[in-house]
Amino acid sequence: MTDGPRTGGWGPLARIGEWPYLLLVLTVSFWSGNAVVGRAVSGHVPPIGLAFCRWSIAGLIVLAFAWPRLRREWPVLVRHWRIVLLLSVLGITIFNTFLYIGLQDTQAINALLMQTAMPVLIILWSFVIFQERVTPLQIAGLLVSLSGAAAVISRGDPMRLLGLEWNVGDVWVLAAVGCYAGYTALLRKRPEVSAPVFLAVTFLTGATGLLPFFLWEMLVQGRTLAFDGPTLGAVAYVAIFPSILAYACFNRGVAMVGANVAGQFMYLLPLIGGLLSVVFLGEQLLWAHGLGLVLIVSGLWLAAQGQRRKARR
Image 1 (tube, helix red, strand yellow):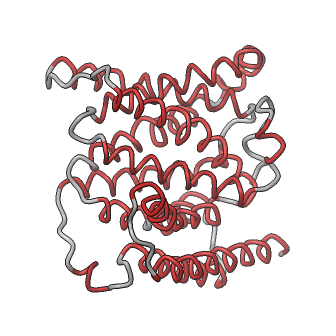
Image 2: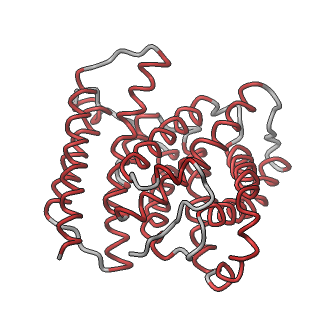
């Protein structure tokens, strides 16, 4: 594994760039808010329009930081244009667009359940592409964390999971999860450029891929973005927190601990999302939240121990 995304040019991020687990917790926190916002504005904000504006704005903001380095690092990007394009399509064009489309129809609990499949899919992609094997401790950690996520999602009642209804939105979300698992596994192949340059190029490349679909949604379906408070607030949030900050933190975290360990932090999504609902929506704090916290953290610790042992071999 290479050193991966550097934090050069980020200032504050450079000071916490050596704390991968903090970076990954921040990533999941921002993404938990993304799912809440995406579901909250479904039916009001068109999904492709939201994704296109998100990545266009995020890309332009990052470009302001990346511009001084972009000319120097452009030849490296050109030499590796295939992997840059693939990462842009998987992680930017497809992932969040499919997620927003799916959230138009599916229940939030379904979306959370399917996202818990991401760590397993990351391990599968890593094995298929790079023949990377997992240790028994990593598998144990994965199972323990999965049980913790299930406890939170089911609110401590396993029968609640058996009573779920599934629809076409779930297919979109599952496809999104599979694509992002591939993006995560492939991050080790990203070119040796600074973090702002990599993010700016992938964000803007991904937004360019969305442009024809955005125009189709607007001109054919007649679904346009309204310039009102909910729309502007949603676009501002998703452009900054789950885009710029989350991707910078996640890419750095993957570079430091590997895709398989980083992927298991996805099990924090239902836990943090549930706690956010308690704080901001006044929902009840349940014993299942505490149980989930203990199990998920224990699983993450086991996975980290397995990764350290594998690295020492």
